[in-house]
Image (cartoon, rainbow, N blue to C red; front, side):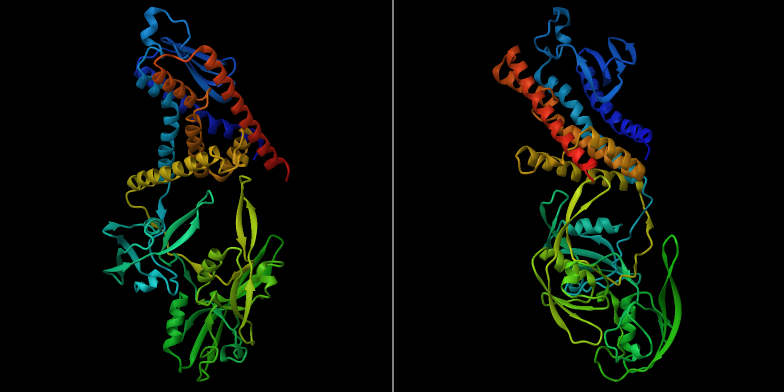
Length: 547
């Protein structure tokens, strides 16, 4: 993105946040009849000004802040007797709290409207239809099957996959009554989500409930591990996709396994697709060619009746130098078990690896034509830098499965205004909790200051978010507004929270702080702010100019 566009994005990001903050002070001051001498957006000599009544409204050239000049904001300001009742110092304590707290409060409320606009732009969502269901999961224990639609939980309607997942996530080890729709019939199932631990965006552990179901279906892609099987001798290979058996079309791996299990001794007429890679100057494209085969079962169960297995437990790719490569895993290997737990879907392996993190994991694998063997995998910690130059730590396995899959078609959102309002409230509360937690941890030294950003970082954030589109930009503005609101409430002189602290001290002492004490406190506050700005600038310089 060009520099001019980035500057415009930065102004569009910062300007409304400053305006809303100062507007909060202005409206509150007018409500309690405090005289407002000047309302300024930006710092420096005004480039535009207008006198409306007793208040001068200004726009200044430096868009890094703003201010509202109130009569009596400084308790030692000389005020005539006639105007004393309209000064901030002459108002009761609750009114002063309201005026000074209204700015941060406006920033804390603004995300509700921004997230509402963001979610209102959504027209479809993923339906709560179960796709892949893991063995030994809460979903399987409740006799749920792929294709089931969850229409309610404990009597509350469920319309989207995210809504269902969030409700289940909040109920680890708690029995829930699911209203299920299957083949146009509705019935109840009781399920107890299994408790698991995940890390939130701050890296803290959270206990959540898992259903053991995913919103995607695997296509009937096959894996072959026995070179002596009828399927292998007829030319089928791992990665082929079966589209029909004996003329019966197939869409999912579950349908494939059901048909294969019900025709153990019968001749199989297969139609399948095989990918052919065609490299071009721009990219490598995959084209699928259709093939046919007729297979006679060999009459035993060695390696499967005809040698056809579901492919999503087979390895498609192993990254060089990865933990998987060091353990001896190869493309075409089948994962049989991990830590003694049978693996029938790759997601089960992923859950085991996620729980073990960098602890050694015992995995049983089998290569084409070989006996099963046990290997030990120790995952490696790696760091990923996102588009905003933030580093996120993750564990690296280094093997990828055959994963030809699809999700149900998205559905139109019913009651978009209600949906947007609820989603905005939920998301604002979640982000407010995360922001407050991060700030509290930073103040109590539980978290380092290497995560804070200066105006340089915000400038780059604005440009990146603008490139990604209006939705990303609205979310960035909402998050920044929350940060601005909470930071201004910190009890640091020169911030709104510092003034609130002075008011509280005055209420306790029953007289204003001495001018000298206020000056010393303000100097300390300014020093703290300057130090934080320098640290933030150092962070951004390291983040954006050391790559």
